[in-house]
Image (cartoon, rainbow, N blue to C red; front, side, top):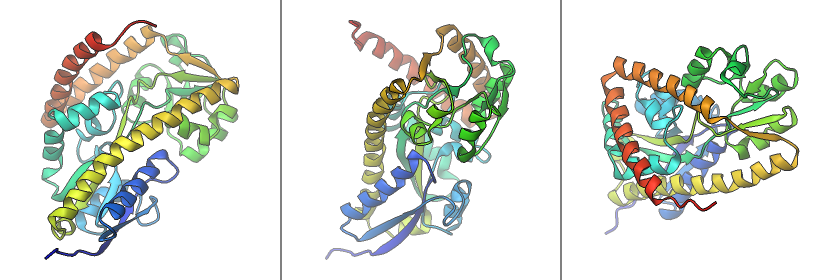
Length: 326
């Protein structure tokens, strides 16, 4: 006789961001695949709890399930950044290969093991972000000096070292700050999301590629008691729904980003590809920063080494298998 489980789980997500579509898609997929036996309802961050409160709320059982990013937990887990996003990290496809078929998922589970979640898995990934919306061209490392730049995290540390004046502003304040020259430049999200915020109306230049965030991984975490109540078939549905969400939201985002880039060009935005020499100089600063983080945390060092080893093999493979005819 089939074991029945009927439950409703709130799923806090992210407000005003493309990633908010990922928990909605995940919830619908679980609901559809389970024929309503497990109903998950998605709420934007702030409705139930704040975006940065998801980790503790799931752990304590305040909510059953949450959608977040490992990078949001670096105060508790420094290595979380390596599973979420870092400057000059892996693009989405090699990251997913490392995660699902390399050492990634094993290390990911090791990272979360001591926190007692019932389930944790990638549940959405975004392609590269726009590097910057700017009213000043950036043609050399000297151009970063004194540049009022909206960003945060490890990238903020790197740009500060490069001489930029880094500040953090909420998404809703970026447009006006660019328009009033409170900011010279800002980064926020992927092209299609930035389009909805109309940054192209307040700036002259769009800088690419998104070296500061080549991909962004989101994840789903579930309280242990809540997870243990599920029968095996519903557990498998949740696992499969997380993987489906990850791949479908990636393809959806890239497709929308292609159109967004063309839209920006049509609007007269000067799209600038950052000089390779500048990228190399910033990459050197990123490598040094990652080295410092690894020296301070053994698990960070373990994950970082795994990623570097994988990237070496992947880059060799990609070089051999990528046609050069354009």
